[in-house]
Image (cartoon, rainbow, N blue to C red; front, side, top):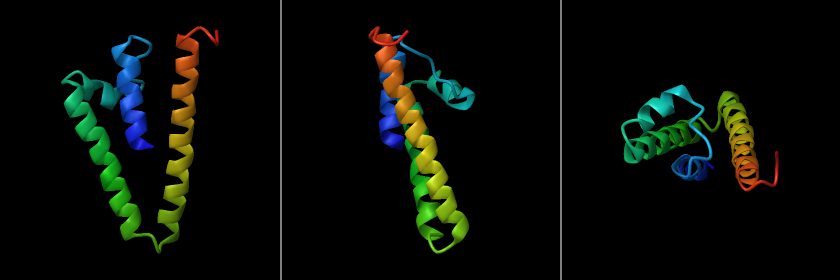
Length: 90
């Protein structure tokens, strides 16, 4: 989901549909798309590694569930942005 979020964000930004809502990632995006992707995907890899390492701990399980909900909301937001950009939503 992190990968989908990263690429869809770049597509929407490239076509002028939206801007990056996260101030930190917007700052990184000012340096270019490759640094943006590297940091965005790197954060996802680190998160997965930490969650896999701590999979037996309750906090890691809760973190994974929270992450799933947050990324699900982000993906729905991307889909709704696409619909709005195409004029299907006002």
